[in-house]
Image 1 (cartoon, rainbow, N blue to C red):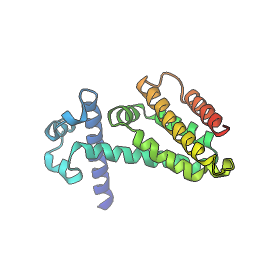
Image 2 (image 1 turned 180 degrees about the horizontal axis):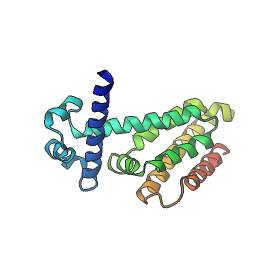
Image 3 (image 1 turned 30 degrees about the vertical axis):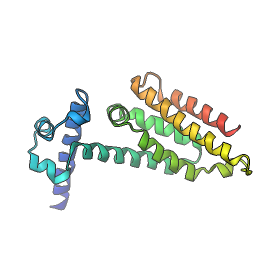
Image 4 (image 1 turned 180 degrees about the vertical axis):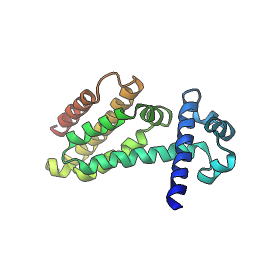
Length: 182
């Protein structure tokens, strides 16, 4: 019985996600009403409220799912270039989700969380010797690399994945590696 209930919950959430994606193609999140979302998903309001409070909750759940998938990539990777490549391939594998998260919800928060995890797994201190005078520069270079990587990824997604994930990963890896050598 629990498995069946779990499958129903999964199905309900899936159709609410799909309905939100559909509506986000037409309008901004702030313009989407619960009534409209329920009508699009063909569920009643009670069903919606059983799982969420507002449409933004669905988007936050989707963002958490993306973060978990990207975190799994990080756990499987042994070096920075692999992390970058596998992350780009993951984003490209679900273009609709990536577009919604990174263009409608400003997915830079997800990428920042992932990059903090990357930083914890691949500390700068292990790559270069940090003296007192180099440490502030290294921090600024890391921030520049993080924000720049996010900008490249968002631009790639906004331009409908116009080049392959492998090429984007190469560009980001090249830039990050150059920064690490400064």
